Image 1: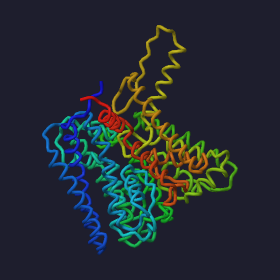
Image 2: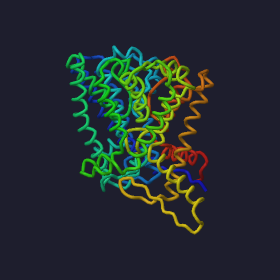
Image 3: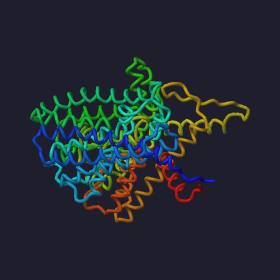
Image 4: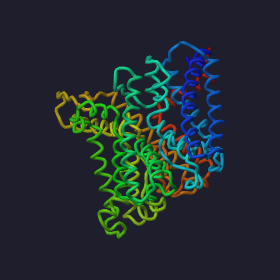
Length: 506
């Protein structure tokens, strides 16, 4: 029998949701301050209004729902899933006020694309956007990459069991340190250290490439944020192509790979356990899947005089592939080149197939990236290999399959089942977006590419994503980005709660 949620359930959810909304309002102070630095007074007023509204909503939720009770699993999952939608609606307000979006829906699309880190964009005239608005786009990516819940845990929550459940609800299930609050703070420590190092390297490269120092610093911070958080937003409409800077591209490749690595692996390396780099199943799987997708892509360009030397191939092909595999979405080619050069011109469209597969797989679990994830691909491969061995060996043989992920683990049915559920869910999500895209008049190649990019939180586009695309497709992509980022479970729980509220018994 399904029971209706009680009033206490709603109070607990409202109270903790209010805390997260307050944290977002506080973070808006950063672009608000930046607006004054750049003498952008209209944006400053827009952010002031947005901050006031956000803090008011959050405070009201906290006051009217005040409770000392901790979160149960159901509450934590619902808070995690709703908080991303709330963040989208709130963060879209200053973006809509900017005048660079055709509608509030477009601004919501941009906000969700920032938080979920695809980096698909519907902005108009990005090259003339105020610095504070532009930085807010990238800051949403920095918040979302580490996790909206993670930042709230870092500053506003006690280290309770409910806090850990909320952390899990945001598609993170690895407690790197014994206390979940310390885990959240470590994630932010790593991110801030790399922020300093990465932004400095990019700034130097930018200045040497001809940018003025203020422009180099601003762009480098924004580009670091999007590369580290495997996002894809850029300060300029031409993305990384704008800079025509080979060292810049090499640095961003390094940052993309680092961002796609499990935070637990970062911790292992930071604490001196560098052997983990050679033993970890995710790293091994990454090199294998990268080799496979690169081979498919290279095969697609055999005999085609498109990228004629190794430097050109790296900058125009390998760069897009690593960007897709890490879920970043940075590009050094124009969107339509994917169709014109990677699709019809490449043999049987293998160029598009290679990068679409790379996007669908993604990076590591407990990282800033999205998609199916390397660990699940590795687990499914190990399970398949074990089943084949069972068919070959005598029936009396006892097989124990191990995997190494931070520590040695025995592969159990529950691991395989969990991986299979997420794998099937992602494939279903990819197919839904593809079907809707085709119903809107796009080809199978284009619709599948864009759908995988949105659902896997990548952000590469073959030209479909634009302010002119159908409204239904904008909504579908928003839902794909949301579901893909949270990896379904917390959304399933939210759906279950809604069903219980409608049909449950008291």
